[in-house]
Length: 337
Image (cartoon, rainbow, N blue to C red; front, side, top):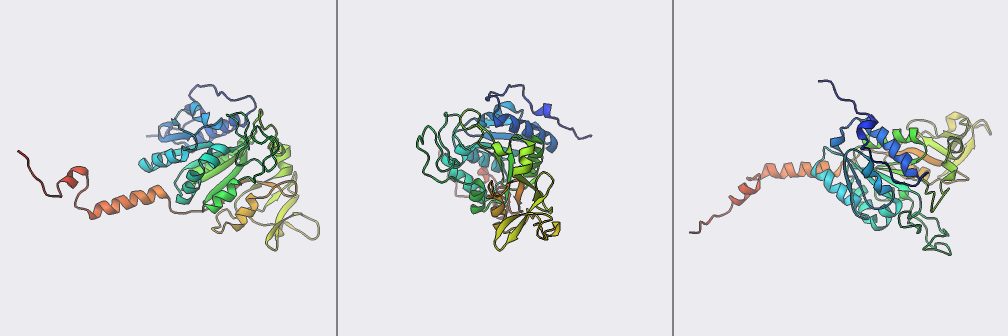
């Protein structure tokens, strides 16, 4: 029997997205629908689970098994769904506030356990749904409704938090860059374990222009570097710049100047178990450094749900009972008349 090929239309449910015009969520939804079609997993074998926030409305617009859960608990629900049915492809959609504030504990432990979840963190550095309060990723000094004189806190860096929790997959993309985002989401789905994709998106109402340096293709060529495994780390409109190591630090160089050639440029190794360089790449910021996009880390490791299933089967094999009825018959039995 010929395998059915699914299209974007198979994953659309006819609901019109209810986000502000220009919100980055529209672009991410478009990229996700294309990625789901490319992965060719049936809609009934796909789950989309979200918490609370503007981004968490996404499940309403996808034809799959979808669950809009409660604030900060999307990963807890996703964990249960994956462990109960490991054959399902489970996607978790969260915002920066939903995932890193009230959901922070679930976030780090999902990474530590390496549950096979495809996690998307939409980062606009603001609480949008509740009308403009600063979030765990807002920069120090950020002025908002809850910080009228500027925040006095340093933000979380999602990548740093993931690597600290021993995460094995991290990628980053700009919401408006749909073509490259599809490739990143497909790579995340192919990774066996907790894959986390940070999507840098704009909030046109409460934090407009927060990722302006990546808004267009031309700006991304100037301000970002697309990391590709086993390829030199080059960037610029004509790939005229590259990254090298100077001591323990990353340095931007211009190819052709001071004797620098393409052979001197670092080669990206997403599969390196040591996360030191991955962390340095993920933490780069403008204007002195390009912002790293693409798959930054992709390392194999045992997954939680597989280990749980194997453990259950191993224990069952050693027991004289295999279900509740057999368990009840293993003890002394009294008949009451």
